[in-house]
Every structure is written in C-alpha cells, then in structure tokens.
Length: 273
Image 1: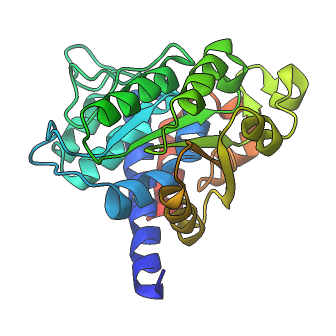
Image 2: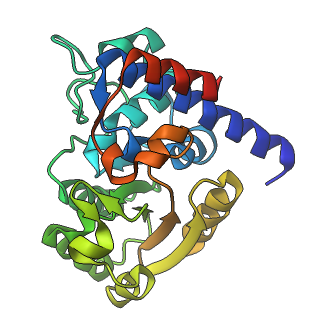
Image 3: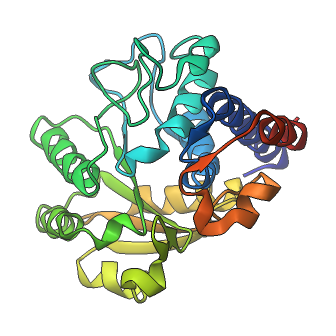
C-alpha cells in the first residue's frame, strides 16, 4: 500500500471514530471498547476492499459484511454513514424510539446492514450460509465477518467453522477481534482460546495475523486471504479494546458497556479532532 492511500485510510478511520464517539455520547451509554477496536478494519473494508454501492445497498453482486459481534453495531453505523449509505445526522438517533439504528444491527431497518446480529455466534453461522449460497449461485462475491474473542467461546462459532471448512468456502474471510477482553473479564481468565492460530487452523481454516490498528497490515492480510483457494480464511486481528480514545483504553474490561458523560464525550472528540 502506498503512503497516500495509507494516510487516507488512517484519516477515514479517525473520522469514523469521531462519528462513533459523538453517536455514543449522544445516547450517553454503549458498547464503546469493542466498537473502537474494529474501526480500522471497517475503514479498510468499506473504503478500499469491498465491492459495494451505497446507492444500491441490495445489489446482488456486492460483497457482504456481517458483524457477528453485533454489540459493536455503532461502529458499523458510523462507517456506513461516512460511506454514504444514510445521512450522518441519523447517528444521533442511536437506540432511541423510532430509530433505524438499534444498538444491535438489524438488516430490516438499516441500509447497508447485510445481516441482523446480537445473539453471539449467530453472525458467523449466517456468514457461512451466505458464502455457501454465493457458491451455489455462482456469484463471485465475498463474505466478510468480524467475530469477537469472547464470542468465540460459543459452540455455534465452531459448528459454523466446521461447515465452512467442509464446504471449502474460500469466498469467506473471518476476522477475530482479538482484544483479549470480554464483558466478564479477560478472555484468558474466563475461557481461554489458547493459541487462536493453531485452533482455527485445526478446524480447516487458513489463518493469518495482522496488527489490528495498522491499515496497511490489515489490507495486506485481506489480499492474502483473497488468494487462498479451497478453504476459508481467518485473520487474527491483534487489537486494543477502546483503541483511539485514551480513557476508554485505560478502562479495559470496563469499556465493554460504559456510560459517557458530556465531558467524556467532549474529551474524546478533542482527541479525535
């Protein structure tokens, strides 16, 4: 990736973080940490890699993105708004009565959302089904899916992964947001994933790793994943919960679902300005 494109994607990621914190700050509470940790990947996907058309969100030959860790929906909404799927002013309505932006993504309500999510493990299962459907219909598009590390303790994740390998779904790329924290504590203390590279590899995936806040590294990993034939790919994203806002990073586990005062929101927006 050349420096011009890298700088543009970094600027976009910062802009998405700004919109995200303004969005959550308006509501005063939300899943802040796990939303911030996936922003760089969303920037690369929506502003560089994915074959999409915001003016035609139901385009049959588009690439699809499924946010399996659905509680990070506010990050996806900020990316979609910045990409032009809907007006940025709608972000202020997050999770309010009559909104089209519920706290967890709903494909029936929000333009650009390809799959409803919320129940952990559900999203990756739907991603496998969508990838299989594209194969059956001979549509050369790709499915991208982000899962959480805490979410990976769900048995459904592994059932879906077994099916993805069985069907040879090389049009499926899964990202593991490996920030090492979940709602109840550190992943290693609650129910450790061990070595995710070895574990996912044993389930038949091609496994890659990337620095989850380096847009060039993420982009390169996606290129490598797209070149894999005959089996699905998982990219382990080494991330920091709350990345980009100092006090959210410092909150650690406490940032999973946290309140935001007007002062905290203003501080975040200053840091991201």
